Image 1 (cartoon, rainbow, N blue to C red):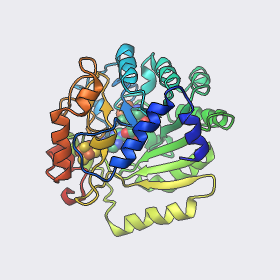
Image 2 (cartoon, rainbow, N blue to C red; image 1 turned 90 degrees about the horizontal axis):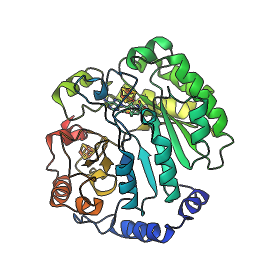
Image 3 (cartoon, helix red, strand yellow; image 1 turned 120 degrees about the vertical axis):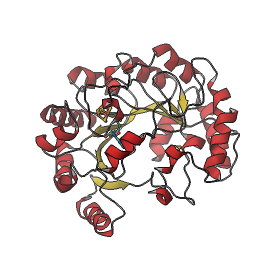
Image 4 (cartoon, rainbow, N blue to C red; image 1 turned 90 degrees about the vertical axis):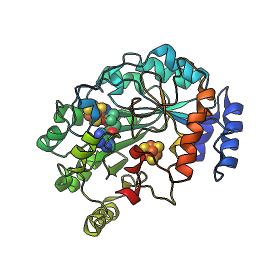
Length: 346
Ligand SMILES: C[S@@+](CC[C@H](N)C(=O)[O-])C[C@H]1O[C@@H](n2cnc3c(N)ncnc32)[C@H](O)[C@@H]1O
Ligand code: SF4
Ligand code: SF4
């Protein structure tokens, strides 16, 4: 984060709480504590599991996956108990703008000195929504762009309309240029066999729209479920293959410019030395108020440490179950659903 950006974020009535907590975090960073002396600096909060799309690789498309909106009072309770937060990511399973309280959530976070990032499918970003969000402190907006043509995009993002998403993204891009908080405008592309052949065109399209960055995510999660692991393994491009890696790294160098950066997200390709840090720093709150270790599972039926509607967040953060989970990560004693994230098991 740039210095000006940081100062802007810290300049609010909870700045002392945030700075003290951030210092505690930085001092504990390289240690292997299980009971943490700090509260998270960043949190993922899932506004909803409802969605207007049915993407082929996403568990939201599963008929058994229920659409639930996060209650605004639960959201406010989480924020009230976590004034130390610097940023929340309004993201999860589902499309954030499906929850009609999303603007109230952004505003409530902002008045508590918390900046907001979100990930959206771009379909609901009409003029009214853009006018709402552009006035708020939003540090980053990510739009998923999984194809450069209508055919490819809509074959992955089922029920979408490619032209609408591109129109909305272009419109938002123009507004962002005049945004006082300097929102980062990012495209996310989940690379899979269905769109791999279009990656150069996807880069050109994202540049034309006016994105500042394009991140290629090269690994599909199976959401900790056998059936989804099988479906998504089929689509895996095998990024560990040298030719495929080289192609991505060449494109990254050739196509990146001063104003447009192409990069590859490899952060979830963990290994026994580079262990997962999520349970130590970035909890995930589901739309039902459950606390999960990360965004990779995003289903409380697989793992959860308790409910923020019933307990204080800090009790859950250092509960026995959370601490045991951290210990297992430290010892590479991984739960079956964590193995998908580690190189040793792929
Ligand atoms: C679950 S979506 C939620 C936000 C919004 N609905 C969207 O599509 O951008 C967040 C991101 O997860 C990605 N995603 C979907 N299925 C995935 C999978 N199986 N593995 C990894 N990422 C996935 C999407 O492409 C999107 O960029
Ligand atoms: S738009 Fe996002 S949440 Fe909806 S099905 Fe697609 S990836 Fe899942
Ligand atoms: S290793 Fe486990 S905790 Fe870490 S990101 Fe993967 S599923 Fe989440």
